[in-house]
Length: 264
Length: 302
Image 1: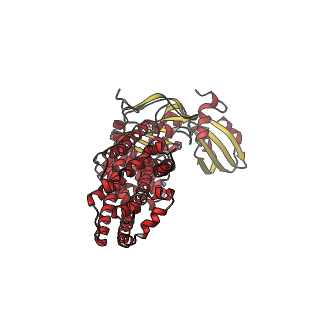
Image 2 (image 1 turned 90 degrees about the vertical axis):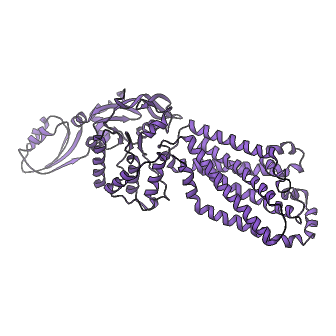
Image 3 (image 1 turned 135 degrees about the horizontal axis):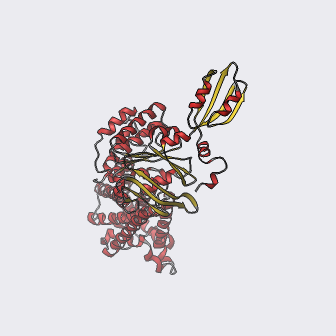
């Protein structure tokens, strides 16, 4: 039966994936091209140092004048996780629950494809399109760095982007699994988005409040960002956590959708 | 055992507290065209979706070709073609794209027969589905159910939205399928349709199967409403004695009545007079139930 569902999802996505790519590439390129003018104004670092701690925590970086500091602040502390999460959570919610609400799931699952297989193929499709965006991000960032003419370790850059990819897959799979379990698209995207926002603040605010700190490791953002992959490379333990969460969520999705009634 | 394409044993489905079907036991023979007749909300769609494993029974069990609908659903679906009652297609695809997709999910089915069907049903497969009328979408739904020439066709209200000409072609296609040994299970709320294409019919009401009849005996007991216009003198009392006549009413020279069973005695009586017009109304389903069980007795059924 090959991978008909994967092919269909990717085919349906062509246009939206094209615009997502344009947006992400433009943002990465534009951000890189700005670096030289930022780097030549050390007073910015002074301003950063004087920011209130709460804001510092949100930006996550103290230095805008090193290439890594700049890229972390502009891309990896907030903007790229945000965009990638929107992309995967929307896709994860639509994958099963979207088709169920629309009514097309009845037709598809009247063919001899197993529900398990259907969910797995939807997952693979999400993985492929997200990976595609990650590659676009790397290529456009590298291009920007080359044009703006400064030095960054490009394999470390790839590792940092891979971390974004893993984080996005974890939350996208959460939305997918919630859709499998409940059949509600709005519910799965809504709950996943809310949990992502909570996880973000839990991680970034933890250094500020002692009461929150013990819970920092409950946040997937901790495993995404804390090891600073752009400077130090991926932390295998953290990668393992993100992978494990994704796999467990996928299994939950597969198991719950197999056992329940499909809505009309 | 292989004599039955479908077998249900006290099949029961409740949605939370809401009734779907109750203790429905039914057998459909291999090769027959079986009509599943009942008003909207009676439980026809619930039964069909249980057969395809889209729903899980609350109680009882169902098998298709001796395969359990819960455990062996994939194998069942391999051997079935299904038209959903509330058909939703991928609006962004063309008919051909959709059929290709469905064929690939069925592990590669040639589209040759699908194209032949499209031609017969006068269905344009090259247009995006969102631009099609309801009737044309229904045709694509039918084609995807039929294209792999499955052993069992499960069709939920197959003719809804089709114009009469296409309906006629559809009846022919069903008859051909049956002639080649395919089993057909179709739901309908239209008695004449079931009479026309089916060998047997099950009648479902409020979630319960209340009768399984050969079409011949269904016809015998069918109720027809007639309106007859006369010219000249008529001996009105003569009609009271016609066997099977009910609810006889006169309005000047127009007679209205219901006839159960054969029309012949009435026709013989009519032949003595000058009849200018004869109008036959399709019986409403509720009236059929009345005819079956008599007024007021429908509560005693089962």
